[in-house]
Amino acid sequence: MSDKPIEEMSFEEAMRELEAVVNHLEAGDVELDRSIELYERGAKLKARCDATLKAAEEKVAKITTGADGRPTGTEPLDS
Image 1 (cartoon, one colour):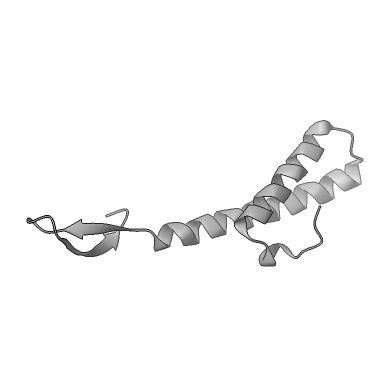
Image 2: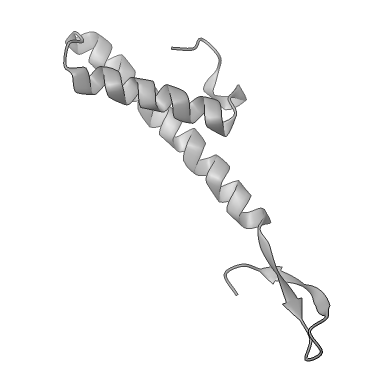
């Protein structure tokens, strides 16, 4: 696992490390103290991934078109 601070990780880096944490925990061969550390790191990694996805979703917009089919602007994807 990486020593890189979670807040400096890209989405992909955080996801890879989160997958590694889950694999270690699922293997069941980790001592209790280490399991707790891994779980806490995993929770922080998940929060990082969630925040990154939310930020990306907020940037996504759909293109609106007029009656003639020409683009007229953009609006939030959820509208």
